[in-house]
Image 1 (cartoon, rainbow, N blue to C red):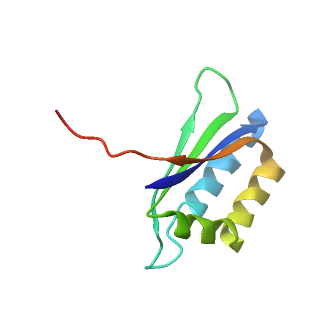
Image 2: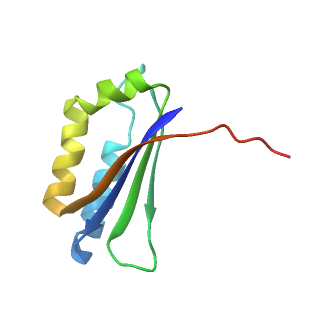
Length: 98
């Protein structure tokens, strides 16, 4: 499984708007959406710092997403409400219960 990790810095007063945008943008686009999970983490020790993590079934699906209007909308929200500090593609390894 592959994914996308975005590190975001927001102005403190933009937090509520950003959470509303996450709620909207994290919903599946259609029944064939290959995104397995979207999660938002907030650094409680530093105001305005978030990590947006998306897990995708495969690299092809993620690449298609990266050229989509939906992804451009996400980047637009980040640009208006704060700044994108870092973005990276990640590979998730399977975990097993012991």
